[in-house]
Length: 439
Length: 188
Image (cartoon, rainbow over all chains, first blue to last red; front, side, top):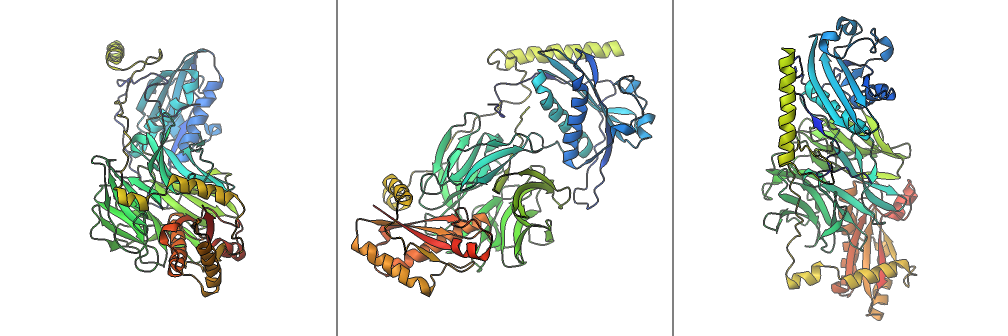
């Protein structure tokens, strides 16, 4: 079984040539991610050149995989190969050998070219991103490894492209965990940002919910009913061994880890009704944060770890509150409608995504951290459980429409909606991993 | 200029590879050029063990768990008065179900060797995590009623399944009404 976390078994060697001719003074273009008509970078990706080894199918593999992966980000307009003027087999892959006018003429502002040498056991590939208007190299990398590493090389360079063009590294080394249901059984699954790598993590053959990623993605914790009580467990993602973390009577449900991964938030009902607690893993102490007779659930951290947003029905119906990290100063921030739940605080701050009941349905909304500037970002179906990407640019959520359940990803303003996974009977409890250093 | 760059590049290559061999860890014969800093393994930390007297009330004994599992899989001796139903978003016991609870209380009083598990359930029209709390409120309100009828609280434990365990998988009012319930399982 392919292990995605390979700290001790680096699958391929990569050596970065920092002194690629042309320099690497990338012009960082910062996206206005909130703009409803976000400009997409027109980019051409040429078939890669076979520099030796004779593996012709790699030529289109690299170009088409890069196109697929970059298109998914929603930042790029991938130009049709049929419009290309030059024959990649005849022209070179370095700036001095490229006629940039051939590319700007067809509307390409950026260009990716590459070349590879391959044998049965080894693969070496050069990737280059050019600024066509400035007629210069932006990023150049060469990766060395085995033939089966070719897709990892694509992901790695795609991350460099996203970094050079948008100022943030890509999300190709992150995963989304969620609770997926088949029939009467739910388990924890993970899937890559681009929809590949769908994998089942738990085998409780019971109800398994509310996954949370641990530090560096080394563990996922979750709640399972397999032992006749909703207990908290964790699976080590390297060894795949499971440990039991908390088994108080009643709910043992995990909130996210604090940004420094020192504290875990917990919803426990051991003291009579669901309350929020903070587990300090440095001192092994459990601190209770809420004391109302109401239900207090679904906690999450502000990105600086100083505050906690959570759901409480102390005012009669479930609404979103913000309190200090030590439990003081709880203040209600959601006021639209009578049912607002599932707060998720953007890693970039000042935005909280949440679920709001509107009419007969549920929709994903965002608001600022004092509850103002409320925006509805889904329009169809029944939508739950929003989670932010680590760069604060995307939301993953579960949606039901037309009788079908799906996992969706979209930009934070609701644009660029795509299906991440479908086919299971239910999806819920999403959680987006940190960068996992997969390759 | 070109040759100078090539030499620089080659030297960078040599230096980085030799550094890797001296610093990095090679496992199973692969040469690992560790670009990333070593990641400290996260040490598992269990919450502090609860104090003895708290432990009694706040842990569900393994014997209970096993007995509940067996009872839930078998034929229920209280079929006919093992479900009560709730209104949407509500958890108060409705007057029409008091009769069911009275029957249940009588049965348990006559068989003191039995304990009771109350499961609280919700229909699908609500947030999954908040429904865990609502299901618990439903189970607890049924428990409170039974305790008022004279049953010992120690012999009743509650669990919420939220909306995770619907009786009826349908997506209509009929199904939803059946899923908003407290379910009673007796075990010994």
